[in-house]
Image 1 (cartoon, rainbow, N blue to C red):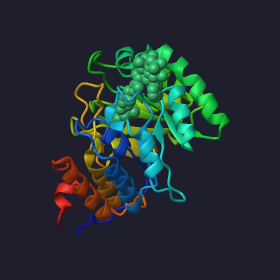
Image 2 (cartoon, protein in one colour):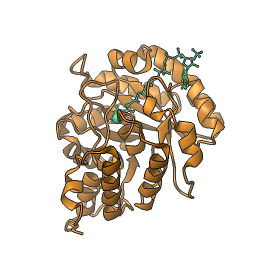
Image 3 (cartoon, rainbow, N blue to C red):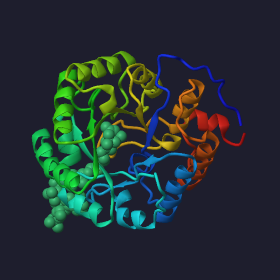
Length: 309
Ligand code: HMG
Ligand code: MG
């Protein structure tokens, strides 16, 4: 199988952690139910490809995201391996109780930089959602869990339009202030551009939040996800969210399509000589296999180029 010529750049990190979100962000939007056995095999195949942080599912209300209503069954079925993390989304204490009952060790809360998306996604104002998250984070930390926070609509909102950078920094620092270890900056509808990425990361740095506490989460709606990732790498970001095969979208955000495809990311990182631990060939096989189950080809350019080679 073809691989890129390695030409490292001294100004970029040596190693990057890929936070694989395909099973959660990728599948949450699928209309047809994906059988739990297929989901469990997806997790195992992603782990076989070398991914070590795989966001598995969500403990949200099953009526809000029916595709992930099998969260309990999936986590009971999923193969556990040393060094492999299966973070899950948890919006509230009810979700935390469900996750704790299954021995989950890593959770993520998910806030919004805008009022409209907070209301549509969480049925809460921004302030109310922070109040909902506070006891989740406190209890999770008391139980020794790691808690990540997402902030959505960092680069634009389908209902509100432009989102001021200071508004994103304000909500993001409040989420971190609850006691979260990492903040993932979501471009939920994929409208960001590289200068905007640099400006947002600089504003976080000015607010005392360095690149080591941040991750980036780009959707690829406008084809900007990879160039935005390079901008983030140039600013020192070393955790990047991506979705195998470019699966994804958010059921509560108009115009949200798939995440940055993990294969497209790994191709670029391999070329830059940046370690990820991921075997691109096995990952492509996995996305081709999953595309077969979903009944449509992967939108990832790298999957399309390498499939069957
Ligand atoms: P609500 O209707 O306001 O809930 O929804 P409530 O607190 O009023 O409770 C109503 C009923 O739901 C109660 O039952 C609760 O027990 C039950 P009743 O007493 O009436 O019988 N309930 C639950 N049941 C199971 N699990 C739970 C749960 N919570 C309440 N966790 C809620 C509020 C937050 C629950 C709802 O809005 C929700 O589930 N939202 C999730 C939406 C979602 O998952 N969106 C996609 C993920 S976010 C995303 O994709 C963006 C991201 O990728 C980053 C980016 O791209 O920007 C992360
Ligand atoms: Mg997302």
